[in-house]
Length: 574
Image (cartoon, rainbow, N blue to C red; front, side):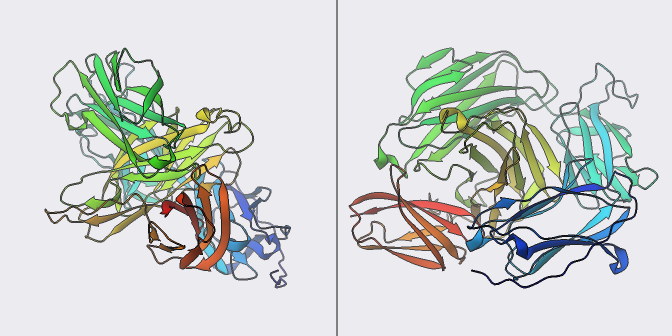
């Protein structure tokens, strides 16, 4: 048991605040909650408020505490999270986290679940201003959005200095939190050119007197008619259904002609059903005849298929290809098709994030990265709201973001700190015990890396999934390394990211190690049916497992790193 370091913390109340600066502090402790404390200090070192006295528990785990609401005055504050034992709240004694939310706007001001030292601090500045406005096509050049004029949903707005990015909603509006200061704001050019005002980006000032300045961006568009197809895949597991989602999107102001879509399923997949139902089925070739799309509209298609219950398929890939065409002239056809590659895995680790190209991004061949975030409700009751957040690596260009396919309706917003948030409100997702097939969700997006990208650069990203009011579930890292092909043999795209398993096939022993030289905190070994046969805590960078007594066959292995991420792979015993 950990020994405790006594702490004496006193508190005082703040002066009266305005209400617009109220924050919510959501703390989840590990087993030893009494060691965790937080403190808010005002400018000049003046003491303000603390939180402490959280209970200890009988076993390692994650223990959410009651939300604490604090109404701050205007000014700059230092928020510090401390641990009396100097080891944070992770690893062997459970996984903690802390989230600070600006109540009025819902903005996440601070979040961490990797606290493993004596103290971590952040700065909070109030009032928290916002740059607001609307992006629209100003057909009559009157600088005002008319009832018949097209609004621009899903477009990226950027603010300098920064840059800070925001995303327009379904009505073309944007709402970007910014502290007091002088900025410029404009739309990221995707075939747009400014009309009103004609000189963009537009200067804007956030002040105490005007904390929410409004900016109207009246543009025109030179973008041609364009139909884009994107797809995303749920997990592929022997004997289970596989779910694919497709979006066919009009990416310009011009309506398309009638749309024809074809989907080709991998020969290993057997078609079950789709929404909407296909108009034609010929083996594994499915076809749809769909109405024309209006400006920025999309057609969703959801396909359900089945994998045979053959554990020998683990490690194989299945492909899912979509292609779409419409009847009017379209100068750009490269994005009318999309192929998804899914590695067949075992029946565990239901929340993950994948990237394609997998493992290796060839600088002289690849242009974009396709990410897929997959989640499953494995709890004991229906999930009513699911929120997925993704903090983008600095190596990714937020200005190139394109939304991909998703399994359920969602609202997407850009949050401070390069955070993307997908909110699946009223998703009504059953738990896997009640309806395994309907307990899955997926969302995908496409983005370009910041160029130039040096060979050898590793781009790492993970996502957090929030089911209702539960603590977040962190996905394993999606990792891809930038390389230049030799022109002779392209680098091998491994099906296991970040985890080395050798020898494979194994005889008597198998060695596990992390590609990033990290520490393995726990190893779990499963049969291909998903039955747990060994669970071994550890604190080593290299783990050797004795396989004596295990029969020959294929086994699945999952390792948890000291940062709480899960990596998985498989090996066979001869």
